[in-house]
Length: 146
Image 1 (tube, rainbow, N blue to C red):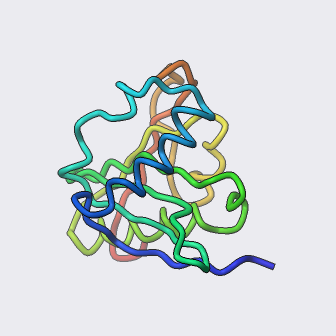
Image 2: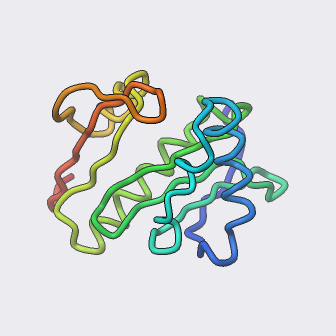
């Protein structure tokens, strides 16, 4: 059974502490991404989502930049495999569509390519290293159907 969670679009100015806590746990501590790479200066002008567990504790986050670049998708370990990441991604795609963007794109960790491919993203280009982790660029074209 999947546990209940809620998803909200939030403002960086008010949600920064919760977003930082999740991303530091997942990217900096678990994956070893250097903090100076994680905090890239794009947060203030991005759209942010936060997912909350049943007690309204922050459990996951993701962002999308103005050009449709989705990133910084992080789900705390106890919540993985329960549909949280999928719902974050689907909500960002819907926001991009409402904004009239023609595409969404992202740099997926190579081990997560299948997750994004199952949601309509296609690999573009060769594998590359980012923060010591292999990645692939992926794109999803947006139209009235998908």
